[in-house]
Length: 255
Image 1 (spheres, helix red, strand yellow):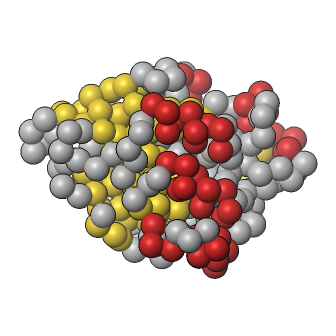
Image 2: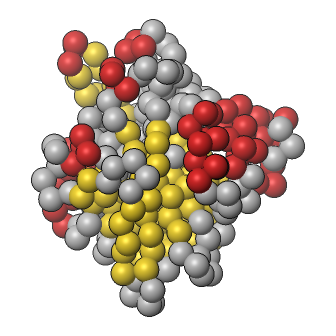
């Protein structure tokens, strides 16, 4: 069986797998500025491909974290009560009413309408360099598994290849990797990478030996410093062009 991925913009994607329809990190606001503590600002520069009314039935949300508006904005937060299941990390669950917390390496099984279950395992993510969690907060990645479905890794905002290696040890086969890329940088950590850069995304693909990599969260926000052109270049230089599926806004791929 296959997975269909639709890139809605930024970290937000629609995953159709095993009869389930899932969203990653809902961010549906129109382009705007957000003022953060310390008078810092982040800017959304592009739209989301669908509105919350257009996205249709959603069975579950995979929420990497809620403390940053590019991962959960005002419209996304208002949308969550319409979803029967929101899986996230413990810190975010404490701030998102009705959500389900997953500890590291814990899992939640979702009943599939086509029979069987989809297992969602929470895996680590590090939103910046070593020690960044004290500043950027807790972030979750996810691995989706079932005997008759492709194994899917959703990285969340992760900048660490050591984390990728740790996930590979636990999940030797990754069919599809959804890697949050874009080389995000802000003054928060003096310009250090907060997500994978393009070369890092290619290296993560090599480490995982992923059959397909679909980059997310590399456009639509001003703090991204590398876009689709550099992702294409990095995968070509790594000899991994055949592994890369680069979606445009609203574009879909079945893998």
